Image 1 (cartoon, rainbow, N blue to C red):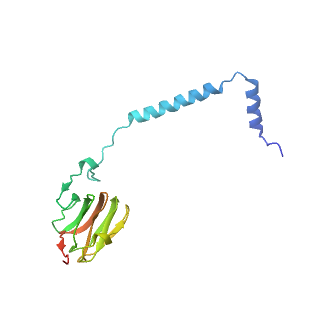
Image 2: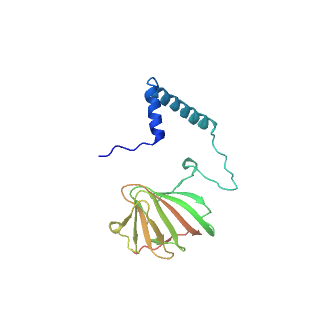
Image 3: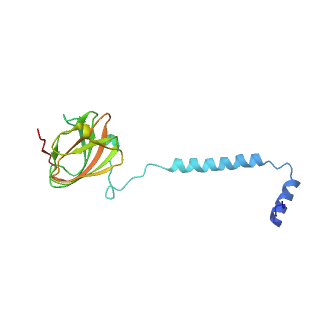
Length: 176
């Protein structure tokens, strides 16, 4: 095995360190740590919550989103638009555990993303909760307009984001 090759500068540095045996590397490391800590504290101390331009963006934190409960076991929060009027709308829909809709259809297409939990869906006019199919968190689903389906939650809550074109109507379509 060959000895490592050193440069003239490295040899000079090693010579200087050998000639100064009292040099305290621990003190140097502590000093560097203190300097870094001061820089971090000064930068954090001068930071404040940024003021965002409301002409550029608006936002709602989770505790600012207003949820409306319904007797069907679903809570709804309107994020954008008005689902009762023509135009684009975005809502959150929270299905409580053990609640499902019955077969129905919507006039327009709806685009759904499962944000949390497992959402259960099925198609057709005959209500068959045992035949429902799980849609786990992250799944994207399109409900096509005028096509019969039903959906909900089984053992745990499911939260969905629904994007659609209003007015959002649901027409019952169950075969008895």
